[in-house]
Image 1: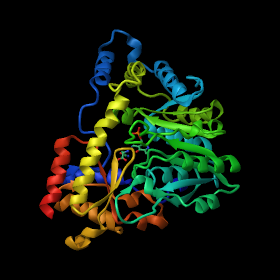
Image 2: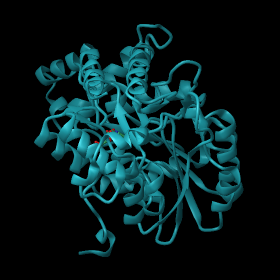
Image 3: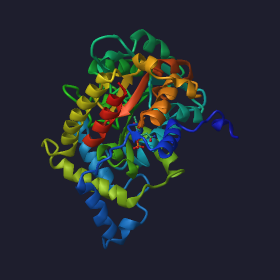
Length: 412
Ligand code: PMP
Ligand code: GLN
């Protein structure tokens, strides 16, 4: 076994998808919508499949299909208020996953330290290790324990963050809106991170796949727009999240050409080029939305409106069942603290090491409801911080959310 794979284990996704296939629970685990995506996106793919342009079925430009990078350049130039070069400052990848992978492989050398904020989307840690880097963790922690808790109450300790930065620090990975907490980092929080990046000459890898899913007064701020940050930030997005087509696996990274070129090298030597028809369909989707960005009909505006209703519905039924939720400001996941239920269930039949794994497996088998164990999103030393929580996904049709509510009611 090569050294870079030593200690690798199947991810929580592979384990929990197998579990769902075996027990067929109502699946609020892995994050994906259970309704049809907007029809103009799937219609575009159908048209492309039947097109008489033969080139639409062949290889396209390795660093990204031209029509797609052009559409993304138009969109993000507007959003970050600077001209983004479609050919040198954007890379199209096989999902945001590959954008993360190419960014990390393209920039992290053996011994480089990478700051990862816990809980974190689970692949950050193995990717950093695969590159020979050293993950340094810092946890978001709730700063209150009673009353309504929102994702804004989960914060970083400033002094602890400052202490993590040193001469070996190469990169910090930021995720806003956040999976699994739903935190949308506020301007002051981003400014503190940016100041440390500038001080220690550190790159920021900003995973913003949930950029359109923000609720109430929360505002998604792109850290690359803060002073002195464009030149040190790589920002990542996902068509799967943007258009509710997670199976399409198209993502992107944008940033200054001198940083993106390293990603291009990793990409050309592994993936080389992403599927042409899918890139063309995503490009057409963006072109349509670009014409109506400020209209309520724009999917980027209508989707969060729909999701907010689902969020509120889920928060209520979880609360009613004694699972205390953290109300998310963004994204489509909700953390709930199940520790008050501990005395109602007997987890001794489950052999896992961590309580949240036991709880979620027990729930799948005995209640027919699947969630994700958040300790999967912590480094080895901090798994205890996730153990009293479960993560549920709320981008599900009303009927299924109601089923979940019913299942939990029966139990009371
Ligand atoms: N980052 C985060 C925070 C995510 O939740 C996901 C969802 N899987 C990804 C990256 C990967 O996105 P994609 O499906 O486009 O690879
Ligand atoms: N982003 C989704 C989630 O967090 C899917 C993750 C995955 O399948 N790897 O549930």
